[in-house]
Amino acid sequence: MLIGVDWGGTKIEIVAMEADGTELLRERELTPRGDYEGCLRMVRELVERIEVTLGRSGSVGIGIPGSVDPISGKGKGGSSTWINGMPIVEDLHRVLRRPLRIQNDADCFAASEARDGAGKEYRVVFGVILASGAGAGIAIDKVAHHGPNNSAGDWGHSPLPYPTENEMPGDECYCGKRGCLETWVSGYSFVRDYERGGGSRGLTPADIAKRMRQGEVSAIDAWNRYVDRVGRGLSVVVNALDPDVFVLGGGMSNISELQQVLPEAIKRWTFSPVFVTPVVLSRHGDSSGVRGAAWLWQE
Image (cartoon, helix red, strand yellow):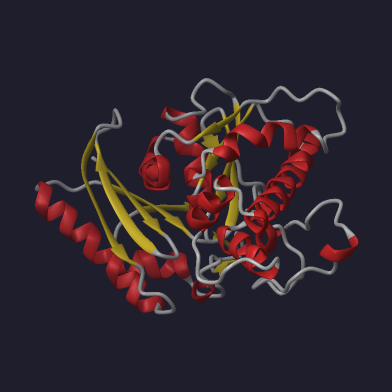
């Protein structure tokens, strides 16, 4: 039995699967935000609970909201900032007392979609997560690619390409830099940009999308800016990597218009005048990452 855990910034989810991908049981709990030890306890409790419920033990793979420093084994680059600098590999082994495989959650997402999701027919998959933050993962031949610094796919912390004068220097990012793509293309950033453009406060991205469809000028303008920024961000991925497919995940991908308009927005900025790369929605939705974590023991 394969057990996957998705330690996310808003939820911690667990799934148990057979080796063929058949799901046996899935559960999720709200993440104890800011409480590192509380998160470790919740991971342990979920693993223990699912094994007791099913009466079976399994291998455990864990996707984390950041990555692991390949030298120190400590968390780095986490949008859930309370994992940064913590001995996360050592601590997860301490609470679970078993062999583990641990990867970045976006890497798990990309590998999941490459293995049996929307990218299964392609060799090089670039998985883009546009949610409360913005991240990405790269899967090659159905396995996540990391690189020597364990940093492949950290697309959200590249600068916004081709910034206009009023986009510079950009907002501060939790990573300590300014103008990172995450500060422009996350769901939170979409809402903030809408409000700055004169839109109503307290709305969700889905609310703003609804107003866009109804013809509200502030919503239309914010949406056009958002699509253009995502297109710019992905155009440099085409220039550098030219993946076989882009797979979209995260809450912003639930706005159906995004998949429809994004190819043209990317093509507008690529070096090559040819852009035929498919842009598709994830097959497994917001549960793709947890499946990818379980698959870590099949790599």
